Image (cartoon, rainbow, N blue to C red; front, top):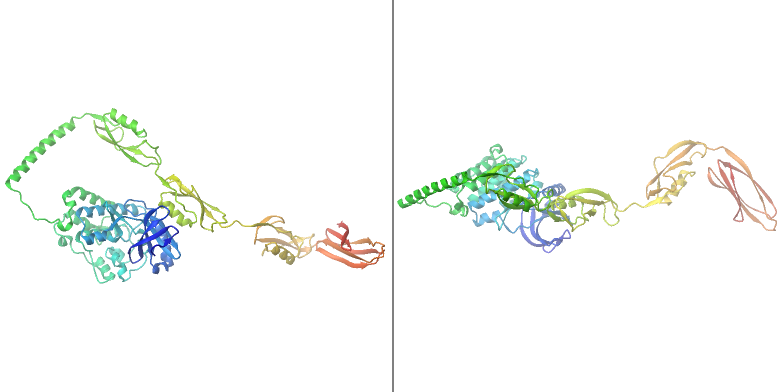
Length: 599
């Protein structure tokens, strides 16, 4: 696979790792010149049509997730039987590696817990359950941000049963009891798995282990994990209680939402001593220290000074005059700051993107207008940067569903779909788009997709078949590139003989797509009554023998009624019978010498 280019865009550079369902590579996006992560499904999954269908469908759904704690999905596709998923490349390590290295602190436990709670909250609010939260699927950047990955594949495998192979061992160690029983997973299942991840971060081992996945799954259902206090005594009780609540066997006893769990994490981050945050868990238990008598005196002095300081601070604050906060929303940032200054207030600016507020104007203020606050209070102004701009991606020559996924992932809306003919782009692929690729447009703006219907049909004029028999009409239509319709109708006619065509649809001369059928109506009689007439011709008196031929065109079509050689000077008198309107023609030695219409 190394150095192979898939999707005419992504070059595989090196293997990063492998799992039970896919092999992960580092790649280079030649179009946007950036590193990406490429996940390629193993062969045993690519042969399962149902799995591939659900994998592609879920990957498109997950591509709609946009959150700083979720690894973005850029693309999904198939190249010569190889199904691949292109994701954001994250510089850092997965959480499993950090645990194995022992590089886990109390601060990191809480930071990971908060980041993953935020990621799951974003996914759950959009109806997406991860189903496979584990340290291997959590990437930690050099800056300490945790990012959750592998949504799509986890959902796609959700309907399969556990296989007793080592490939699934990593997932089963963090699976919820209800998933182990084969029951549907919900948001609380992800909370249990996150609790199992935090358990391993704290204790440096998973909550359960066994000889095979089935044995581990049974433990999740029936047994309680070893107490955290037993494995790591001396940890803060609220931290232990949070993990134990997340890992409750009964889903109703867990946190009902990741929002509630995230609130507890934030509270712990604020309440636990800051000096504990930088320490490794293996080093946090220290022997108690006893203060010397002089230390108690120093503490008492500090307390007295603290009380005096608080008293002066409160007195200073109480006697500060109050002012009314003005309404500066919608003003230019400079004017808004001047207005606040005139009212005795300080201000600070935070810039955000907004598609609804003009660039440079105040989008919102953190203290509502009309409130009374102390003079000198700091007011935060959210100032619009205008809409967030992004480069329109090129989705031409892609399947419609793939094009839609790319647009959503890049922050655009799928606009109107227009079906058009194209001689260059196969049917079902996007032949064009508006706006064109490469231009800058605001995020959440629509992109119109023109989907090819294949080449435009060839139109040809329909030949005249009224007055023909069915066999003659079929032969004439086939020669022109059409066919005779199966639904042949019949109608009485005094103009055409029985079995002759009296009407056709489309009419003669109309344009019709080649290969289409022409419907006809056939006379069922009685037809026109026969009539008689005589044709006269004087043969030149030149001593030569001459050929005489007479034809009649009437309701029967063209009929030759006379063809013979006559001597010079003879007078030809030939009686003819015709039906309906008729025209007879007389040829002498192959030259037309007379033509007459009869009624």
